[in-house]
Length: 167
Image (cartoon, rainbow, N blue to C red; front, side, top):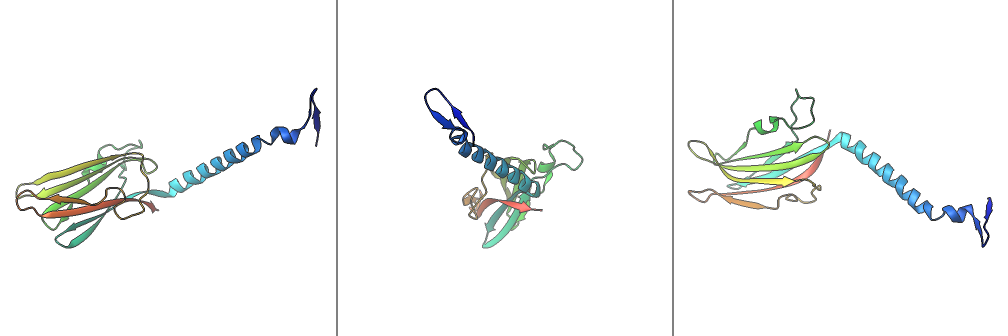
């Protein structure tokens, strides 16, 4: 260990760099964690899982980020909106759209429709904007929602959670 002499005091190099050691360790850990996080994001993508219930029957609806296979750009080009809504008991339809890339989720849109003789009628459209956190409960993203059809008051219940799909 070398000793540096000053006019008023004697200080070792160790004492001079000691305050920086926690900072350097903190920076090293941050770099390590960010590398691990980016590595895990390469293998995991957002998964929206919804439980939709009508007339005592529960349907599980799963949606991932839809990307246009012919596009080199990592943004949505309208391909996600072409996904068909799921039929719920012949009375309702349900659809979720995840916008963004597999690495960065930007927006989640959820649509619920009432089925009429002519065409589906939009009952609810909900938009969730980033930032998102992964859900720890079955309805962690949306809470539990109750929707009612116009003519007879038929009840549709749904709730969604944001999870990670490894693949």
